Amino acid sequence: MTRNNNDGSQRTLLQKIARQAMQDKGFQVDFPATVMDIVQKLSEKPVVIAGPVRDLRSLLWCSIDNDDSEDLDQLSVGEAVADGDVKILVAVADVDSVVNKASVFEEHANHNCTSVYTSAQIFPMLPEKLSTDLTSLKYNADRSAIVVEFILEKDGSIKNSDIYPAAVQNKAKLAYNSTSAWLEAGAEMPKAIAAVNGLDKNLLLQYDAAKKLKDLRYRNGALNLETIEARPIFKGDDVSSLEEEKMNEAKDIIQEFMICANGVTARYLGSANSPSIRRVVRVPKRWDRIVELATAWKFKLPTQPDSKALDQFLLAAKSARPDQFPDLSLSVIKLLGSGEYVVDLPGADSTGHFGLAVKDYTHSTAPNRRYPDLVTQRLLKAALYKKPVPYSNDELAVIATHCTTMEDGARKVERQVEKSTAALLLRGSLGRQFDGIVTGVSDKGTWVRVFRPPVEGRVVMGFEGLDVGNRVSVQLVHTDVNRGFIDFKRLK
Image (cartoon, rainbow, N blue to C red):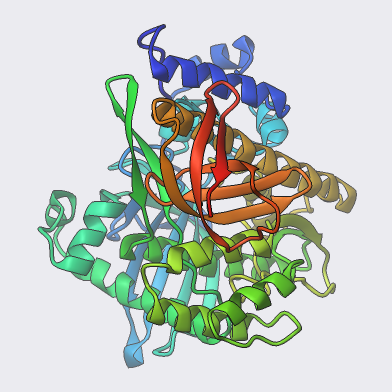
């Protein structure tokens, strides 16, 4: 968590804005003092390997995450098996072993539902001594985990799968960008990989498996989207610039394995006649506008939502105009709408996830960071150990609704701080002209994201007739750092 270093710094100002935004959205900003007192007395307990718990500590487990991430929820490892098949194992931190329903940490986690990540400060769902230490799958530490195992055939389809408890040990803490540079561009192998005999070959095996999973999802209608995220760069405690971040091959490995593990988990719970909390994205509410965008790109889409047809359009658009594809992706994402959590009962027909082209999908791989994942882990352990379901259907329905609300609130908090950070960066640029793309149109206003720097603001003059996906030229007319306002006037 970022600490206050200078009461007059931009970082401190952004921390104050973040804390106020958290309060405004109903989050508990700090942990109660009684909880923190208990946390400080906790110590690491040895992993118990008995009964169904397998000892898998010798495998070449590794984590791949952001450079500064310490709340490590999952590890992965691959293994070549017969007939060209590949076994992938995903280890998920057994957070429930410390944070059960009766623990003192449950109330805060149940209320906030998620960790909130802002450029100025992180607001963890669980105390840091847990999420970044005792329940983190951190480097070189023996940890209890729930392992999701699946065997992939040559075409990326799942041959069979299994879930079981195990003891694991993280052999290498890797970062997305440096790992991807090695995988994609032949850059120097990261030292953490080189230090572990055989890890380089294992990562290449995982890389190949992830590509097969991704290709199969796209063949099934998953959406090929590519967006640009802006990460603030601080010089000391002041914002110096915004750096663009894109998907890369290392992120793809984790994304594909997590999608697959979440699907295996959902199906396992279904086969055990257990209820579950599913993550769904329903069919787009603004499909008509997506059809209009495709027409402007000289591509015809059907009048009814069709994920395969949409992906064909996206692939064609990426090939034709790769420089404009991130902007098209952003428009489509806005028009698809956000996801939500719903309860899936045994025997019921699942809604599915439109954008991922998967029907059975839950959130289970980040129990340190997301409450739905922790609830899913409890349901999963009950199924594994043949114990009663720890929640009633009504309780799960309340949790699903609340988690959807708080996740939406978390996005708004993160967005507020992003906009305040951008306003800080732009406040000396009044009158400057920018090119951009319209990202949102509603009764509350019209928004545009300018290309350089990649920030979003409201069109307060000349917004008439604009819709998502339109490209415009705008002029900066006003900024308000505390409120995160960046106001533009349309030029053409």
